[in-house]
Amino acid sequence: MSTPHALLELQDLRIAFAGQAVVQGVNLSIQAGERVALVGESGSGKSVTALSVLRLLEAAEISGHVLWQGQDLLAQTPAQMQRIRGDEIAMIFQEPMTALNPLMTVGAQISEVLQLKKLLTRRDGDARAVHLLSETGIDDPARRFGAYPHQLSGGQRQRAMMAMALASEPKLLLADEPTTALDASLRLQMLQLLADLQQKTGMAVLLITHDLALVRHFADRVVVMEKGHVVEQGALQAVFAKPQHPYTQRLLSSHPSRDGLVDVSSPPRPPILQVRQLQVRYPMAMPGFKAWLKRHHFTALQGADFSIAPGSTLGVMGESGSGKSSLAQAVLGLIPFTGELSFSGQSWQGRPFLDKALRRRVQVVFQDPYGSLSPRMTVGEIVSEGLRLHHPQWTQAQMTQRVLDALAEVGLGGEAFGDVLSRYPHAFSGGQRQRIALARALVVEPELLVLDEPTSALDVTVQQQILELLQALQKKRGMAYLLITHDVDVLRAMAHQVLVLKSGIVVEQGAADQVLGDPQHEYTRTLVQAFPNLS
Image (cartoon, rainbow, N blue to C red; front, side, top):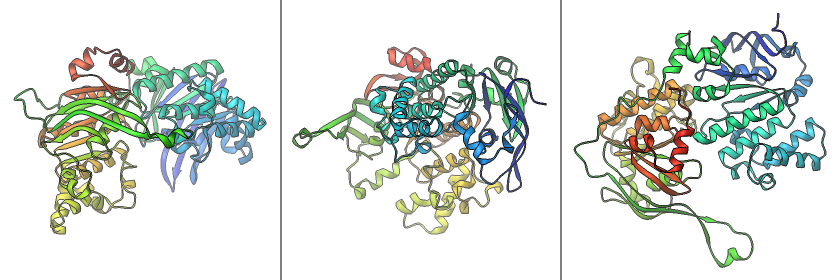
């Protein structure tokens, strides 16, 4: 029996791949106009559950019932499902850069949906697409219509994805991690936009996320999944105030902690990195004949002054386009810059042979632990790559032992990982891949580690584990960290000093407690207040 008036109802839904069950007996319903959040860690089955609604899972064995307004979608023909997709049920995918066609403008992609689903002419479809872009709050929608995905910021791409999903005026929107890796203020903007559009159109929304702070700001009801099972569901306030299941309790209690932070208050030590008047400019193409007469540049970063002492962490915060990435790339010697940038008296020379020794002292851990690891190399080859460059005189046995020591140091040692050297990155979870990326950096014993959003793509519990690991490694090795993040809670847990960037200019910097606890600049206050806190 289905729930009366339920828009969507899953009854005993079971999903398996090659006989391996990933979703086991899920039951949930969504009413018209309701906001439901489906939460859980990676591997819990939440995204697979959502994809099964639209039957987008290839080679999946699905049983049970997926009732859409009383009709079982699992019994529909491909032609019937083609009509339902987009027309009645739409989806926003997690990563707009990969979900959008890179060879088509975003406007053409939205217009294409309207031409196929609403049978509009190209001219009418284009006009409607501009209107939809305007409704999602994108600036200068007529110009953005003609932009390709790579020409838009992360927030703009996500707005374009939202416009495309809403083009056919669906009754249900499946939003799969729609704000992952966006800045704090952008996340709230996107969530508020989604709420406004939901109220305006009356559609129901299933929000799939591991970000519990955002769930509190959006959902009416929460469904919690663990290892393919729904372990708890109920009204938002009831679940958050008195979670009944131990798994839900663990999710809600997982917060970055400052308890393991290294004490650098005394004695003061000379800085390992000294930066004065750092400036980064990029060439900028200009239309017309003027481009031939004068070179134009865009200044991404200017006048930055800061230093980092051994064993301490400098946190850098700011929205997209603030200059955070340019600052990190300059510190890593990957882009041209002007100003003074000195590592204990050494600076980048811009020549690989001369910079080789400094490369060992400065390492980096990137945001995406999957994209930053070569899928064609084994873990042993990945982690030993730096050793082969910096210690070519070592024997294979010496390299293997150092690699095993580094992997053990990040928690990938022992009997459970006896074959770790021969395995490929895809065989590991997101948190384990980030540990591999850490081992790759640590194996050459760096003095400064640049951490570029190291936990933004991870679940809350895994995020807490990685931050605790970073704190322990800093205490053990005495490394300095340059931490780039939009997560204020991560800064509270990790940073000794904080530097705030806005449009390439440092607007505030100082001790983490002072900057985050009593920000003086209006922009800093906006960033701190925009970040939702579960406590």
